[in-house]
View: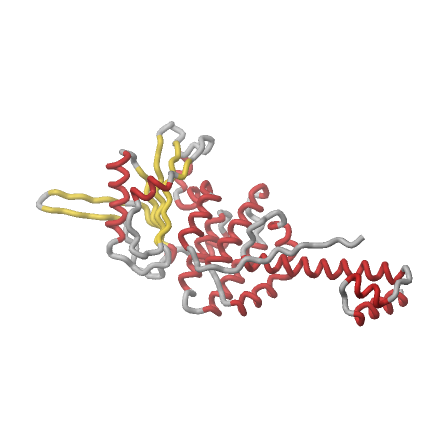
Length: 318
């Protein structure tokens, strides 16, 4: 019996949607996000009660003007163990140059939420830029005795120690590394290739993720890394060759996944092609063993006649 196989065409890269990548990862791994970036808050949240990513209409009222900047924002409603409702404003300044207006924008988000919805917020600003000196954590105004100071939480990627992130068991440590590497290599494809290969190998070898969460973590992170560290086609081919030895791990983590990231979609297709060819050869050997003509076998299994002759010779020697 001949089994036909349908190959899925691997997706191709689109323009990097940093907003979408961060939002997708935060949506998939929100509890891990809070644990990594706000451990004190994590201890207070009652995750038995459903948290809610607030609707786009509300988001548009609060986050109005981007002016072409790459910004990923989320507003999440959670409940503390005390029963109090809190809103978490997650603001990620992506791949940007230092912006002197940043503190003012953070304050605008705060007062819009306060004015429109009368909610207290926990604001977390993630700064992915490569500038060492830019880490604004407060907005201040004063005029003849009238003073205002607004402070918020800041996590600066450049301040983090690479080795500590590598050793962390929280999946967002890998996301931070990927963000750091993207910023450090945005004008250097070869360096980006090395960073990407390093992270892919690290993910494939990760053994400190909780076993019950490992599949979720790895599938989410590999998707994130593959897109945030995009490289030219020739380097993508080189990357695939480097990690083909990990095919079994790749198949395990993505076996049921429909939307594979480009690099791993192509690896999976190559693995299927290899499997299809091996299947054809096995069928050919069985047909030859039944005494069927070489030309008939070649036409049936769609392999070159010379390959069928080699298989026939190999069969006789066994």
